[in-house]
Length: 255
Image (cartoon, rainbow, N blue to C red; front, top):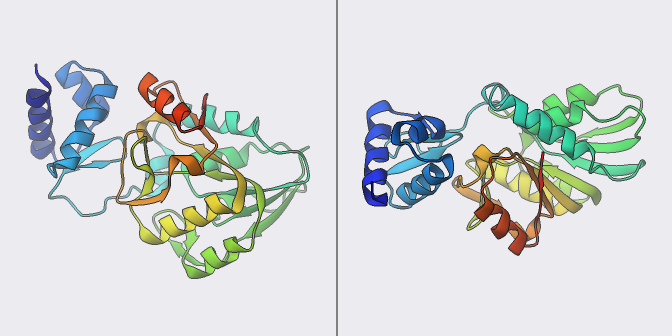
């Protein structure tokens, strides 16, 4: 099957079923998930479909589709657990300051912070703050702002302003999508502004993203590849993406 025929078949399946996952498309068309992701990116550029977390929906679907934190927390749990554990290995020395972004993988990372490693933690994520509140080794700062029901995270002008005064050792960042051509993206403008400020607040920026996020482009970019230092992901990342990230001077850690 030629690429054009395969992409047409994908578009038909997506329009028939309303939402189709990358894994389902790969199985139906007997191709790799990497091929599916490339084809979906091409179809989205043509305006035929819209990519969402883990798959795609018809272009006629809602302009912005963003899964809630509880839905995301149940997806790819093994990969997220491994990524969170790998992130712990990259913690700065005891006594340092870190910023933790909202996200299902970053919340797992927060839960794994070692009890014998003293840190100042800044976060806008209510679930992260709830896991860390009261821990003796954590000096916790919860950022101000409007809490979004979708992500349970504070966003807005107050959040961004508070982050502008912070210079942390490391920012641990989540993302809805990461592509080697467009960088890191998210569907919400306020969320993007906050993530942009989190990335800027850290002397070093580490992104925690499972491989289903790779090749996905949401509507608003909040960071280019040259603004991040490390990507922690799983073995689903393609060799081409590893090479492209290395060319952008991004270290890739496969958990």
